[in-house]
Length: 133
Image (cartoon, rainbow, N blue to C red; front, side):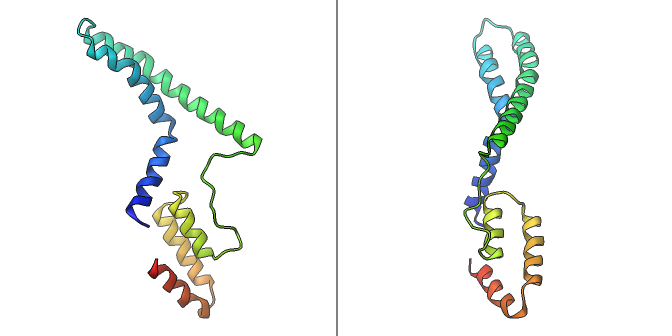
């Protein structure tokens, strides 16, 4: 997997994180108080402490509610694999890894299992496909 694909997968996970969303909203309200010289620093700290945790908690609750509602409606916003289930298992595994659905140790473990489960005639071409990509 290329570095660009890994960075993109991590970026998608961070963008979909309620923690980062809550922190960004909190900073949106707290940072202006730090810039205005007439507002004391203790007020900015108090504002961050009072607004921050409820905002982050609210983002977690809203994200959970959104996920539950989209799951009930049958429209999940998780990245779907573009490879169908009747394709090569190595390709499906690589696609899941590229989408960020599984991490590297899981990918390696599943890849070894797939290699062991293929017949001896099919194992060498599958290894060649992996080496070439």
